[in-house]
Amino acid sequence: MSEQIHHVTDDSFETEVLNSDLPVLVDYWAEWCGPCKMIAPILDEIADEYNGKLTIAKLNIDENQETPQKYAVRGIPTLM
Image: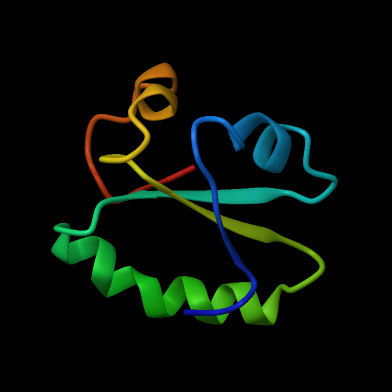
């Protein structure tokens, strides 16, 4: 995984995503999700290519249930 990808939680979402100086692409995912694993290498490439212009954040929906519910995430992977 790219070092440019940030793992966020319900507690850090506001600070790292909503208050970010850069645009943020949030990947809502889960460990058991096959399609989530399929897009991970693409997100790594995007994170490296747009380093300093865009932040990629990943939020595990199994470990952080408040944020996906707040933003009506109904399926994964969801990119927002």
